[in-house]
Image 1 (cartoon, rainbow, N blue to C red):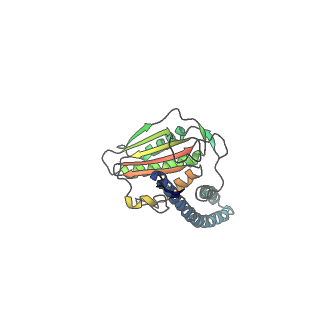
Image 2 (tube, one colour):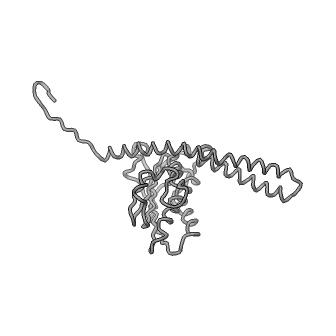
Image 3 (spheres, rainbow, N blue to C red):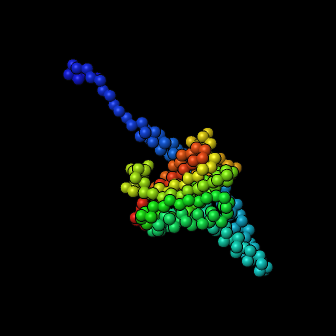
Length: 256
């Protein structure tokens, strides 16, 4: 550049990590938009047969057979439960209630449930920060997120000789929510399993993308539920060391 008949060399330094982070955020946003549309389509496909089941069940209630009536009440109750689940998890409707509680209560509930069906050879380790404050979140949603992530860790570790799954909680000092929240906690799930194949890592949160023989909906739904808390799930994976990090803003108000 030239200034007052003098020539200067202007050098601009840019932090490449910030540029990379911005690209990752844009890619995540794109994935979420596609994911939301796919989940809405899936919800429609699920709710249509549920409506038919509910209609058939109501016909059974008009029967003189008491056993049919009892069965119809069970069917109606389960149809209602599944409809609410679809509305809440796939469509984001009927906002879940946020409760003031400690995150370790949910982590332990999930861990206790997982242990009921986990192989005895799997070693579970805890590394909790006992100083983490109580805050408001939807416990059933965070339960579902952690259940999906720990189940994935189990699936990735079941074929190795000495599987270890570690759950860790910390205050996130440097976190991807810095511009959205003053404070956040991070829940990390680590396993020493086979890892996520590199070819599917960029799209791991897309519905129908999975490293195992399943529908692959778990991670997409987990990310959606965390985003409803204004949080984020990040991961890094290589054979023998996979980490999923759930960032949750510390919300001290019952309204998200």
